Image 1 (cartoon, helix red, strand yellow):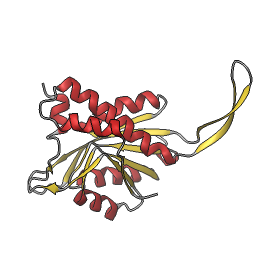
Image 2 (cartoon, rainbow, N blue to C red):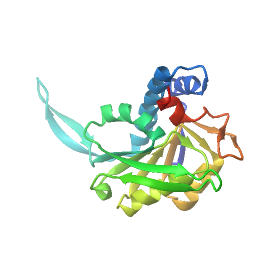
Image 3 (spheres, rainbow, N blue to C red):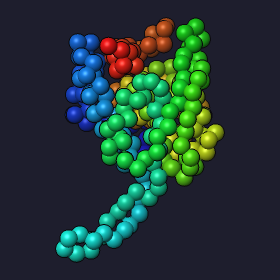
Length: 207
């Protein structure tokens, strides 16, 4: 399996078109972000281990398969929260965590201000959610935090990425798979993705 997976699902690409559109109103933007997070999350879950189980149907016992290890959903605040609801619906038993990082606008380096993670990350597959992989600094730091807490299987789910961000994450964490809807061509001098979709956090949470 490649360490970079660009998902071209038609519904995901339709959602991305709406998310890029500056005229998309905030309620619709939130809905599209939720849908995109769900589709990308399903792509990231393809390689998760399952285990056999016998299930009693109304007519007969059937052979089935269930997830073989616990799931954890960890959002990088604040924009990562927009990707959480859809995945929480399909993984209702998944434990949730949050990592708060902001970027120094001069150095573009991440600064940590909040970490709350569920127990048992060493036994879980972890989906790390952040819609924008720009410089890669925040994502790389978040993965470092997760690994320090015991995580061994971390999959980064991001809506838009740049080659710069991808290279940084894979340089610091070569074991991490990145799942994205698109790789945009430009990272400008301010550390923003171009053409991108603007500030995802502002568009999700600012009226």
